[in-house]
Image (cartoon, rainbow, N blue to C red; front, side, top):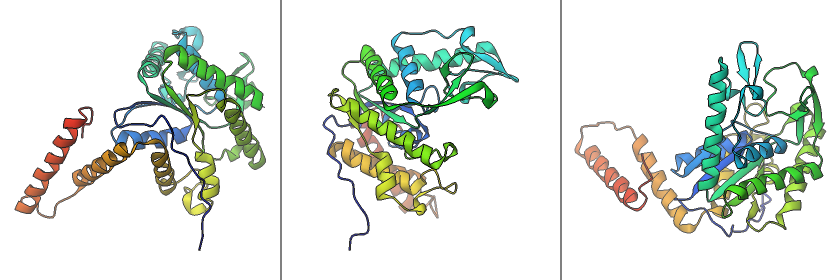
Length: 315
């Protein structure tokens, strides 16, 4: 009996290896995948500017990197007791102007160096709905609790998103012509925009990505949104808010991602890492027993054998 519709996934030609360098930018879902990559000891950088949802904001961020921008006082403003930037998540805010400028320029340096070094860049688009700050006519990364009357809410068209994606790709290639780019659409539903509005938004994002795939050979697409909507169409795969994928869903999507993008050698290494991680988290009933001491010795041997092949892996 068939109880689930399965999306057929092809093997990605430019596969990810355990020693690949990865950069992940975009919505909160990219942080879920980023945590998995970090847990499995991949060399990964996740969201230097914090969570970014809108393709225009992501495009602007990569353009800053390609042009080696320097953030100055004109790029920040004071809201209540904190300095904020419309180019970053609130996690970069600071109570001092010099503090936020240091945070922004440090994040940009991280983004530039990661673009240059990365073999793969994963970009997750969250929404086509954006908030345009009226005084600057600028789609913002975060409203920073500024009153909504100071923004115009706008839905980006597929053509506008096409333009943003091309700018992202061109900016990345300006820094690294050999990198492989993977686009995906976040499975998180932005129902604060409205149920119908969320569907329009996701449709625009998916349409735009597929518009640019055929003309860019080093660009791929991973269907995380489709996996959530079609393979996991049950509220048991959602968090308590009924919007965000829960841990079970993230694990499932991670497994599908792994099978499509990781080489067989890498998948074998991940099994070894998982076995070691489980061993390290084991709590012994009798830590002084010979059995446990033998277990620890065997575990250290596994770690050393793995590190002989992959020195960057640390536990």
